[in-house]
Image (cartoon, rainbow, N blue to C red):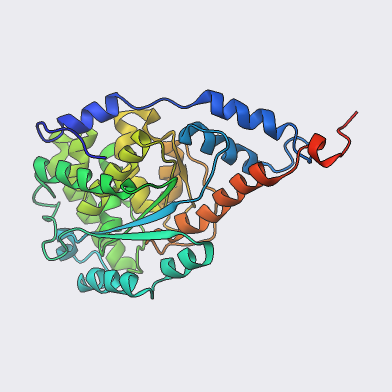
Length: 340
C-alpha cells in the first residue's frame, strides 16, 4: 500500500483521518462460537480476547494467522556523536548482515514458529542528523520513509510484527517520549545496550537538549517524529498505519517500536486499536510508555534486545489463540454435555 502523491505530510494526515473501523460483526461471531466451545466460559482467559481482536481487525471470521510477517527496520543516528551508546555505529550494519545470514536471535524465533522475516535497511551509510542541533529529517524525507515502511505489508500478511535495529535509538525513543509527554529527561532514558551511569547521564542530557532545541515545534506529533526520531521509527509508524488500512493486526515490539507507535497515538488515540504490545521491555521507561498508550503487554520476560524478538515470540501466542478458536470442537460437535 502506498499513499497518494501530495505535500510531504498531507497524505499521512489523510490516512490518519480515514482509519478503517473495526469489524464488530466478525468479533461477535468469535464470541458466539467461543460460547459453544468445549471449555468453561472464559477459561482460556486473554487468549479468547486475542481471537476476538484478530477477527475484529482482520475483518473476518474465522480469524487466522497463516502469513505472519516479522519486519525489522534498521537505521543510524547522528546523536550517537553525543556518547549515548555502548557500541559503535558500525554494529547496526553488522547486525543487519547477521539477520540476513540467519544468525540473530530473531532468526531463531522466526524459525521456531514459522514466521516470515523482512529486514529493511534505511540509508545506514548516512545517519540522521544529530537531534541536539538539527531536525533528524526533513519533512519530505520523513514522509517518504513512512511510505517505505508501508511496504512491510506488501505481498500479503495476516499478522505484522514490527521491530528495529539501530545503535543509539533508545536515546531517540526517549527524546520522542519526552517531546510528547514531558516530565524529566531522566524519566525516559535507560541503559539501552548497556551504557554505564555516566552514559545514562549523557543520554538524559542529550534528550533534554534535543527537546529544548525543538520545543517550539513539538505540538504536532509528526514534527516530533521527524525532528526527534529516526528513519527506522518513521518506517515503523508507516508500517503500523499501512497495516490498519490493509486489515492486518500488528504486534509492537519494545521501547523503540512503542515510541514510533506513540506518534500515531498522539495524532489519533484510535490509531493503535489494531495493535497489541507484544511485551514489556526491561528498558525502564517502557512501562511508563505502555501506560500512556493504554496497552497491556502479552509478555514480560525481562527482554531488552529489540530486533522484533519480543513481537516474534508473542506471535506464537496469537497463532495459538487463533488455532484454539478454530480447531476446538463445540459441545454439539463433540457430543459433550454443556453446563446445566
